[in-house]
Image 1 (tube, rainbow, N blue to C red):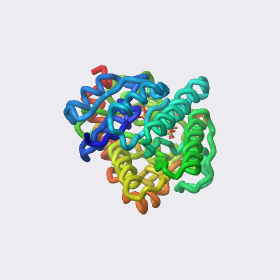
Image 2: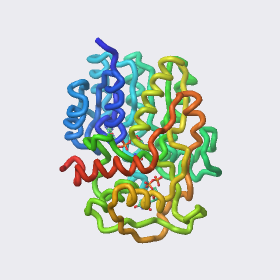
Image 3: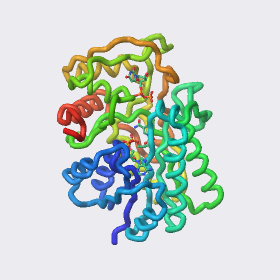
Length: 339
Ligand code: NAD
Ligand code: UDP
C-alpha cells in the first residue's frame, strides 16, 4: 500500500486546502476530523476536486483508541496536525476547553504516533506565539510570549514538541507559524466558512460584500502605522498549503526538525485590504471606524528568509489575488457550505 499522510482537522479551512494540494502532488491522504468546526459537505467538495483519493475518519483526536485503529489500518508515514480550536476571544472565556482540546489532542496524537512508530509531524502553530512583537518583520528567533489562552495552547504544544525532539532524536517535527491565512481554492469550490459572526477580517469583508452583514467595523485608526489601521501579513491559503508540502519534503529529505514562519513578508493595513477588495471585485464595502479591539497589536508581519533558505518556499499570490479568490468562493457559496 502507498504510504499515507494523516491530516487531523482536514475538513477545516486550512486542512481542506492542504489536502487538495497534497493529493495534487501525489500524496495519499487520510483525514481525521470530529467536525466540531466544519461541515461534512467539505468532504463532498473535496471529492469534487480530487475524486475518491482520500479516506475520511470522523473521530476526535483526543480519542487514542480511534487513532490506534487509524494507524493500524493505514500505512501512515507522516502527520499534519491542524485539529484545534482557534478563536482568541472564546479562549479567554473558555480556557479549559482550549487547553483540553488543543493541548489534549496534541498529547493524544503524539502518544498514538509513538505507539505506531510514526515520528514525523508538521504542526500548525501561529504568529500569535510572538505576542506583541518588539520589532517587525518578525524572525523565528524573536521572543515568544502568549498573551491569551489560545496562544498559550500553541506555545505549550511547541514546547512539548521541542522537549520530545530533545528526548528522542527520531522525532522529525516541522513547526509552522502561520501569519494571516486568507483566500480560497481558485475553483471557488472550497473556502473559509466561519460559523456565526466572523472574527477575522477577510471573511467579514466577503460577508459584507455578499450582503450578509451591513458594514465592517474597522478596529482602530490610531495605530502607529502609515494609515493608522492595523497591519498584518495576509497569506493566500493555497500558498500556505504548499508550505506544508515543502515542510514534509524537508523532513523526509533532511531528516531534521525545523521551526519556520509562513507569511509573505509584506505588511498590509486593514484600509489597504478593504480598498484592494473593492478595486478587484467591484463590490462596495460599507465600513465604520470603531475603537481598537482589545488585545490587537499594531503590526505583525513575517521575516520569511528562513522559509526560503530551508524549505525553498515562498508565497506567490498577492493581496489582489487573495481578494479575488476569497470573493469567488463567497459569491459562489453565499452561506458557505450551507449553500
Ligand atoms: P478550522 O476550525 O477551519 O479547522 C480545524 C478543524 O479541526 C475543524 O474541521 C474542526 O472540526 C477540527 N477539530 C478541532 N478539534 C478537533 C479534535 N479534537 N478532533 C478532531 N478534529 C478537531 O481552522 P483552520 O483555520 O483551518 O486552522 C487550522 C489550524 O491552524 C488550527 O490549529 C489553528 O489554530 C491554526 N492556525 C489558524 C490560523 C487562521 O487564521 N486560520 C492562523 C494560525 C494558525
Ligand atoms: N479587523 C477589523 N475588523 C474586523 C476584524 C478584524 O478591523 O471585523 C482588523 C484587526 O483589528 C486586525 C486585522 O483586521 O488589525 C486582522 O484581524 P484578524 O482577526 O483577521 O487577524 P489577527 O488579529 O488575528 O491577526
